[in-house]
Length: 195
Image (tube, rainbow, N blue to C red):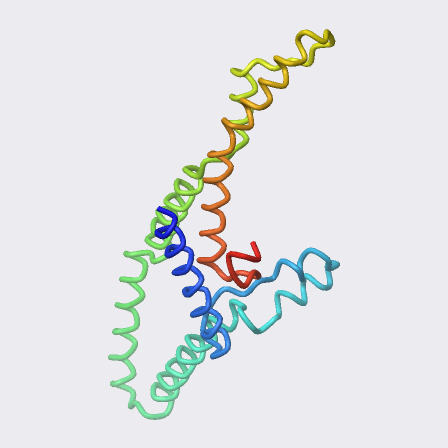
């Protein structure tokens, strides 16, 4: 069992290194902002919006450039290369495209898609076991009130030990799960030992 766990962590570790190399190459990937956000003023935050690395602008830049190139080339052909009757044909095609664009609204379809993705993500998030609930339930079911008499103090200590035993596996599962999540995304820690 131990060997299996070790291997599992090693895999995560390897995965994490793979991400590190892709960053160096400048590929698309997660960029951490936390330290920058936590100690900045409003100006700093707006500066963060205009950061190039890992920004939305960088992500869309290539698409936008291609779009503008196509748009202006079509516009140039329409203005300077086509004769009057050809222009009429082009306009008819444009009107037909516009009609179909209104018949199938893209934003509506995209809205559905986003809703499904967010819903799935939220369901996964809600399935993560939080130790808080278990703690509350444990303190409800395992009796351990603070009693002043010496005779009862031993019983209270026993209850506290019981609670700790009950929560150990819960906290352990939570910790291992979180480590898994951290190592899957970009991690400020180098390896399992540091954590």
